[in-house]
Length: 226
View 1 (cartoon, rainbow, N blue to C red):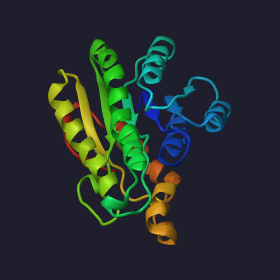
View 2: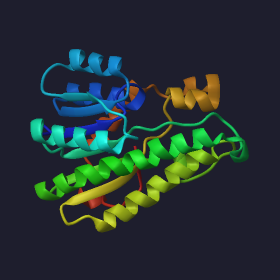
View 3: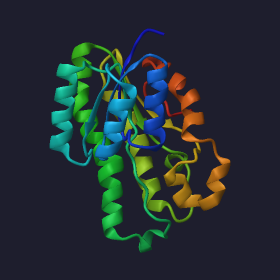
């Protein structure tokens, strides 16, 4: 497969970090962001030239806008955008979720995705091509007790992405992607030690990277799973 330019949010740990490692191994160029300075420095040092890593909080729309403009002017317009950054609240019945935690979920999981989409899409339209893959969840298509707030954000991602697919011009695609069940810190926060039964982010990325690279306009608006 020819070299692709891939933009990923939330690259400091878990799925985002593992995807960066795998895409680099496959010879693709990555522009990534996260809030953790140390992790960003590690990616810069570990993966070397050809990539573009920045410390950015996706809940800060102005910062996202500056990042996108810098990336597109210095590194290039991506072929693939993976909105991976997400968080989850502590297990609790919906009425017991603190307002601050709920707002943080909405800010990261919904508004953060919206900010990246609104800043990057004009560049994709000008380029005439590009795929936007927004991270959904099994809890964006089904529900469980104690994760209602998280479910709300991922159901929103499903709907927002499928509606975005209707807005995009020919040549572009938007796809809500359920990554599956992976042993991340988020899964551990929900399931505790039983999360160890799930594959690691590295094991997942070895399959998921190829899945993401195969997304195209034929997948526009389709809810898919890795």
